[in-house]
Amino acid sequence: MVMELSSSPTPLRLHPIIPTWNSLHSVKLPTNPNSSRFILAGFSNHLTSTRRSCCNPVPKRHKIPISIRASTEVGAAGSDRPFGNKVLDLKDACWRFLRPHTIRGTALGSFALVARALVENSNLIKWSLVFKALSGLFALICGNGYIVGINQIYDISIDKVNKPYLPIAAGDLSVSSAWLLVIFFAAAGLLIVGLNFGPFIFSLYTLGLLLGTIYSVPPFRMKRFPVAAFLIIATVRGFLLNFGVYYATRAALGLAFEWSSPVVFITTFVTLFALVIAITKDLPDVEGDRKYQISTFATKLGVRNIAFLGSGILLMNYIVSILAAIYMPQAFRRWLMIPAHMILASSLIYQVKILEQANHTKEAISGFYQFIWNLFYAEYALFPFI
Image (cartoon, rainbow, N blue to C red):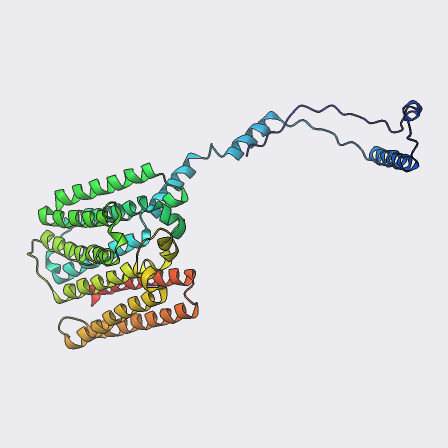
């Protein structure tokens, strides 16, 4: 809203304090006594209000400098914000566009798998591989950004209900800017992988982008089908990420690919974990999914049942991890793997209890889903040391 302050004074009009005799004399009173009484009362009120107004001093009108008027208009319009603030706003919108919790999962996973490969072959570590490792991490972040970005572009109406804080839904990032970002992510990722990691890893990377595309983009839009949706998420975040990073790291060290027990464990564990993420990610989004007729396990089976199902799969994961440490002492460090997974399993049970006590409110469901991601991060953080 533009506030305009005039700098020109307004002429002051003074009303007569006492009406003249001629003006009173010229008034013709009606013959009806009731009407006469009404008019005389009106004259009395007029005289009273006039007498009161004359007792109050008339405030002085000050001229407002034109510079104040101009600065007010600019500030109200908000069109000339500092360039630095605009850059910060764009940076914040781009960061939210990348979905930071997924970036953290991708980065942690790649660090953990690279660290494991280096621990197993510490004699082959070279400083010349650092740049290659960082370029690979950047390619993974680009792939992640493409997949989550293309999903936001085609889910604007749903996100306005489920996730109004996302930059496109909130109006902080235009659709054309979002398209430029996802095109850049896809092109940069493919270029880096193609130049540095060979045809096999390039084909795996391309497969991941393709699966992320058909998940969100019509006419495929596989996210409409619950089984297809969680299989895509489990494949990309579970198998392709873990197998691809470990394979690429061994290739960079000059080694042929070879499965090890810890890598088999983490690939299986994270693939099942990705299934849990795939079915629980829709828990906070039930309202919007029902409104736009997106079929998910949460809309079909209910929030409570899906929360129990996802927690049950995770508990099974933790139990199997403990059993693997017990029966394969040559492959795993029992002193770390058993108590760590017992603690994580206990914390999961506690969070399910909190969700039940909160009666599955939207805030409690969002907190539970974020806790699932924290468990995901914790497993990758443990992996290099087990």
